[in-house]
Image (cartoon, rainbow, N blue to C red; front, side, top):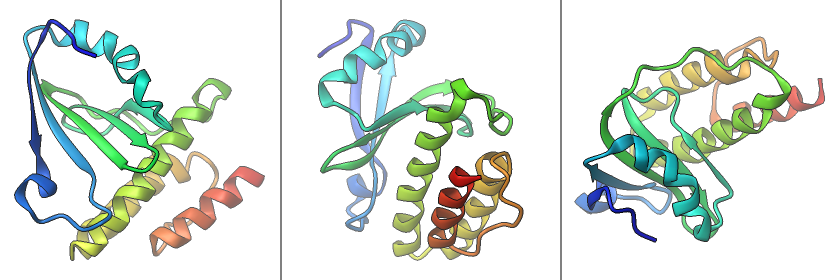
Length: 159
């Protein structure tokens, strides 16, 4: 599906540079002359892909629409549009799907960064995940690994 305000879409990131691992996400830079109209249309534009999850990245300094696609993994549509990072999630009934989608997006992205040899980034992102997602869900301590974060998230669901 096309949108008349999209000028170009280009492949970027580790996969474009030939540095990807099997877990790496797929990054696409989207150039548009009318960001707002494209942003409003994105859910309908990506619907034929049947995303398992989709949402705007709450913490990126630029607008990034994140998708998780069956058989492909994580896909980021990155726009040259500034975005102010948002505060931690508030645990409300209407936010639960977004919290869960954001958690699993992170849980898929972090092992790719670990495989790419970026343990410091993984550690700092687990801390950020805790502050923005797990702590609001009632998880007291910062997990020491992605595996521990997944276990904590599962335990948070039960409380």
